[in-house]
Length: 334
Ligand code: ACO
Image 1 (cartoon, rainbow, N blue to C red):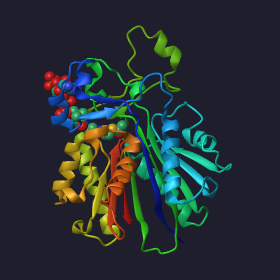
Image 2 (tube, protein in one colour):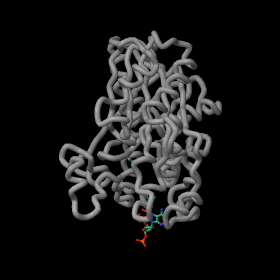
Image 3 (spheres, rainbow, N blue to C red):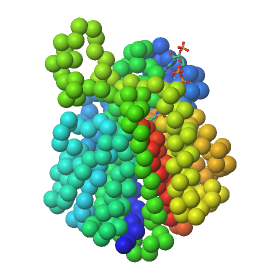
Image 4 (cartoon, rainbow, N blue to C red):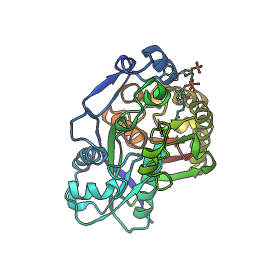
C-alpha cells in the first residue's frame, strides 16, 4: 500500500468581480446584510458572452496544477472531477478535461457531492493510488453557479452566497506512508436532501413539465433552508474534523492549517473557536469568492499554499459539509 500526496496545485477564477453593491442593483439586498450574515464582500461570476464553463475553468486550473507538479500531461493516469454544475446533463466534465488537455485516453469520473465534492474526490483518487492502480491523478473541483441562480429578490437568500471558480491538484504516489493523505472520512444523510436542492431538470421533472406548469416553476433554481443547513453544518464539521484527528492520534493543537469549505464565514469562525485555533491556523477566502461549492476547498488550499502558509511537515485538515447532506474531512501530512 502507498500513500498519496499533493504535488501540484492550481486555480482559476473568472475576472468579472460582482460586489454586494452590484447585487443590490438586481435585488433587495445590501452589503451590510451580506457581510454580517456570510462574510462575503464580492464573488466572481462568469461574464455573459465569455467562453468559461465548469469544464473550461477546470481545464485552466488543471493546466496550472500539472505545470506546478513538474509532470507532463502524459504522466496523468486518471481524472476525478467534482462539480454540481456540469456543462452537460451527460457526459460529465471529467471526459471534457481529458479532451481539452489532450490527455491520453485515461479514465475519468465525475463526483456529484456538492460542497463536499472536492474532499470526496481526493478520497476517491487516494484509494486508486493506495492500491497501486494509478500513480498520478488529476483532481478537479469547478463550479459555474451564476448562470443558474435566481437573480431577483425571490432568490436573494441563496444567490448572494454563490460564486464561480475552479481549482485542481495532482495527487501522486508517496512511498512513505507517514506523509501525504493520512486518512479521509466520508458521510451522508439523505433524509435531508430536500433542505438544499436543485430539483430539476431531472428525469422526475423534465423540461416539458417545467414549461407546461401553470404557475411559474422555480424548481430549477437552488432551494436552501439556510438556518437548518447552518445548524447541521456546525455540528457535522466539528464531528468529521474530530474523527480525522482521532484516527491519526492527533489533538486539535496539532492542526497547523484548517481549510474549511467556504460556505459561510460564520460557520468557519464557529469551528475556529470550537477548536481554539488562531487566525494563522485557519484559511478563509470566502470574502473574495463566495461559496464556490466543489471548488472552494481546493481554491482555498491553493491560495494558502501560494501565500506560504503551508510548509513541509504541517498537519493540514480539509473539511466540508453541504447538500445531501454530505460531509467529509481529509488529514494530510504536508
Ligand atoms: N439580503 C437581505 N435580506 C435577506 C437576504 C439578502 N440576501 N436573504 C434573506 N434575507 C432576509 C430573509 O428574507 C429574512 O427576512 P425576514 O426575517 O423578514 O423573514 C431574514 O433576512 C433572515 O433570513 P434567514 O434565511 O433566516 O437568514 P440567516 O441568518 O439564516 O442567513 C444564510 C442566511 C446566510 C443563507 C445562512 O443561513 C447560511 O449560511 N446557511 C448555511 C449555508 C450553507 O452552509 N450551505 C451549505 C453549502 S451550499 C451547498 O452544499 C450547495
